[in-house]
Length: 200
Length: 200
Image 1 (cartoon, rainbow over the protein chains, first blue to last red):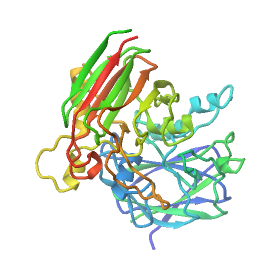
Image 2: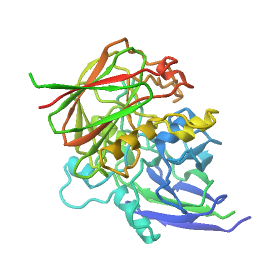
Image 3: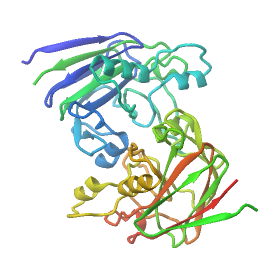
C-alpha cells in the first residue's frame, strides 16, 4: 500500500498539494453537510486549469459520473472521478464565493471566501497569478428547477462521506472548505474538510 | 431615433464592436437555425469579462430572463437581456468550439472555431491576450435530461429572430457565427449572423 498523507483543512480555510499524474486524493467531509471547492491547475503551465464548461462538453452531462474525467480549458483530462462514497450530489455551475459575493449578501468587512483561499494557497505553492476558474463544488446541492431556477440546499453528506479523484496530469490541487454561512449550502455552520493523498 | 450600425457576420466568422454603456445590440439570425456565441470584455481592463458562473449565481437560474443582467467575473453587470424576439432557447453551459474540439470530432487540418474567431477579433480591436470565457450561446438548444445529460439539438430560431442586449459597462462585444457543422446545433449548415448596433 502506498503511503498516505493527511491534510486537515480547518473550517473556512483552504489547502493544496502538488499532485503527480497517478496520485489520488480522497476528499472527506468529516462532520457532514459541508461543501468542498476543488480547483486543479497544470503544474507545467497554470494557465491550463480544470474547466467546467469544457468538462460538460467532454462528458456530455452536467457532472461526470464515476470513471469519467474532468478536462482542462485545453480539453486534456486532468482529474478522474475515481470513486464516490457520498450521496453523489455535486455542483459545477456556481462560481467560487468571493468578497463581492459576501458584500452583496450584506456582509460588512472581511469574510473568508473560496476565492481568497484559492489565491492564498496558490501563492504558498509559488504561483502568484492564476485565473479563478469555476470550481468543482463537491457535495454542493444546487437543484435545477423546470424553468432553470437554481436551488441552494444543504449539502446532503453524512459524516465521513468522500469522493476520490485521480490526477491525470501533474497539477496543483487546491481545496477550500467553503466558508459560506449566509446561504444554507453548508447546513448552517461551515465545517472542516480532510484530504487523504495516496501517492502512486 | 439613434443611428443604427449594421455589421454582417459571414457564416463561420466573427466580428466585434466597442460598446459604450447604454448602447444596444440586436443579434439577428437572418436565415434561422444558427447559434451566435457572444463574449463581452470590459474596455478598461479586459481581464474583467462576462462570466457564466457568476451570472448564474446573480440571477439564480441557468440563463437570465428578459430584464435581467449578465455579470462579469467581478460580479458587475455588463449586459442586460433587453428583449428576446426568438424562441428564448439559449445556452450558457458549453465552452466555445476550438481546434481541439474539432480534432476530437475527427476533423483533420484546420476548421474555423468560435475560439479562433474571438481571438482574431480581439486582436483587431487591439487586445492581444484574453482568457477565452464561457460564451453566451444565443439560440443554442442544449436540453438537460433528468440525469443531467446534455442534448445537442438544432437552434429553433426562424429567419429574422433576434435577441437585444444593452451594454451596462463600456465593453468589447464579440459575436461568432458558430461554425459547428459536425454536431447538429446549427441545423446542419452554419449560417450568418447580423448585428444592429443602436448607439445611446
